[in-house]
Image: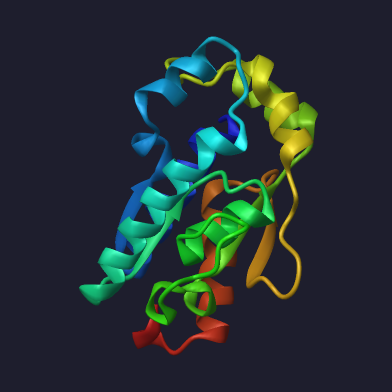
Length: 180
């Protein structure tokens, strides 16, 4: 069994491979201060997360400008975080340039699971900077996606291949093959 973070990375990586597009894991882009804070058992706050999310938006925007399609594994727990990912702006800001807003081309995959299941999986992982003690803060922060956001929810009790097949089928049903 895997923890949610490793599952998110494995699902994203395999999905990107099957869709023949680039894969990024947002955890690789956390600033050192964020990783240090989490490794000490201190939950990140909005001020910690927004610069990181803005940098992820810049990465997505750069790839879009190059005509690349991307799968990004990211714990965008709040609606405001997902807005920052798609517009580059903090909640109080407005997207300054229409071309910066990629929300109409972004599908969020919400990997949903119980606290017990995710806790069990996290206890088995080694070498990640986020300890099990922060799991409750993640659940406390979570605002599952809802309309009008573009999203789908997949239960993490399924295996990785089932999850990837479900996501890929959803993408194929909504998007012409050349538009991933």
